[in-house]
Image (tube, rainbow, N blue to C red):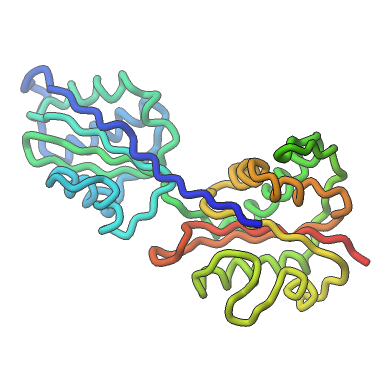
Length: 274
């Protein structure tokens, strides 16, 4: 069973004419500050990064957003570009961004560039998970899985009844972590390691687990809730997640690289101990 998710949202290109070159003009630093303050006023804290700044500069040079992101080695979960004619009117920039607050929600990073007559603002959410907080992610992964199991789920043409909650198992966690690591190292997808031929059952047994196991893999999500949502949308994964005989659970998450097939790798391992 596989779940594939690649999210690259290239937001609609917004172009507008500045109303007039006004008195509230300033250098690029002032423009950057204005954009940051306008986004903050919308409740958006999008850190300005050098990589996205270069992406913004590339789009001013007629590069497509997707191509510019690739050149910078930036893998986005979501990304969009906002461009406008610009003649130094900071007040217009502030007003225009503030008037479209709903468009900027959810983005975590930004980049800005201007050539003196045009400006380009790139907003993006990187396709990666903060692995420093992996314990929290895994706790949330278990919670989201149990929340899904607490109610009946429509898995394709079959309705699966609510199932008992799962409890964390360190051996299954070790098996999941091994597979998440090896999928990145060897750049493959699926349940069988192409180098050593190991299967989910063999990995669990090597970690000390005795019993039957099942495994789900989700690629591309950046939160546990998103991973579970997409697994539920796949009939096979959904049935596996809702299987009532499973009692134990272990999981892992890992980030890919700019060269791997996917940006993130989420692994669920279910078990029924003998």
